[in-house]
Length: 379
Image 1: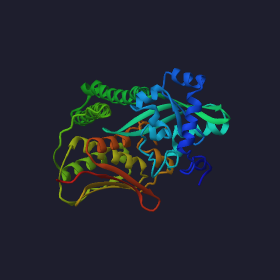
Image 2: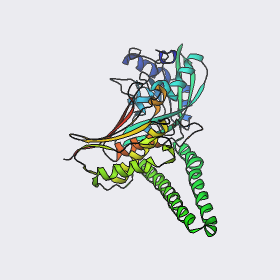
Image 3: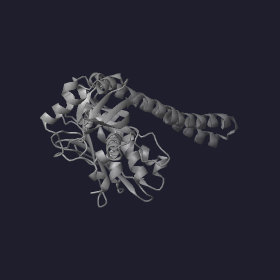
Image 4: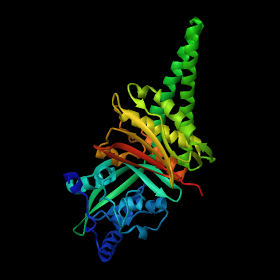
């Protein structure tokens, strides 16, 4: 176990209900603390030394749509419905994912140094409508009252800010690059010989398709995050869909020196699902697999339809523990120099919220990396 992992608390380090009630009274009856907390314009809570909530302001209750009293004793990840926090099996702060959580890090640093700390925090939260991505800025500030150490944990939701930044810096950048390429083709078109014009015609079509796909993908992702993406299930020929997706990405620039093998298919090849989203999910996973491959490597795609329709995308690379722990978070990217960071996040969002399936992965030195997408079987 690393030193960083050892800084996180264990399930045994919890206060009794009686101690929690006493800590709540101590803070709630102090006019300075209670007034200060409610004066914050953002959600804020006070945590005890075991990082349990002992007092919350009205903004937290409004955001989480619950009473302040119901939050007492919970950890921050549990209160915000982080998908990795489970009070019974894996309490907030004890999972492998927690060592990469900005919120947990801010608390640990503040308690250890007795100084304020600020961190960015990415969460995937669960709710009645499925998963949703949340970006937060966390302030952790030490507080001592009645001889007891506490931490003021203040939160600002930066989700819209992060989304807007990604859109402006990356999405528009990709569109402008493609549009500039298309403009260059149009400008030289009149001077081309007939054989050259035919090749430029093909390139112009490819660039146009790229622009349309970028716009449609961003539109669908925005609608999916709002919860109002309209989907229409239909009968899908898996052989046709997989063959076209594999051939398309096998010709991508990312595939230079690499191979996308012909798909392996076992079982019934008819599936009722949302074709456009399934195609986008599989395309993103194949692109990610190609990025993880080295020269001469092969990406394999398979489909098995026995009890559960299951797609698998495999590459021989292996992901680090840090990458595995943050993989499905919005804005997280492994690309050098930065990337949009919505590829695997959009896969999870589309599969779990709109295709009613699940997406998992395994990554080891011996077996490489395999992403598995399981969809509902026929009724």
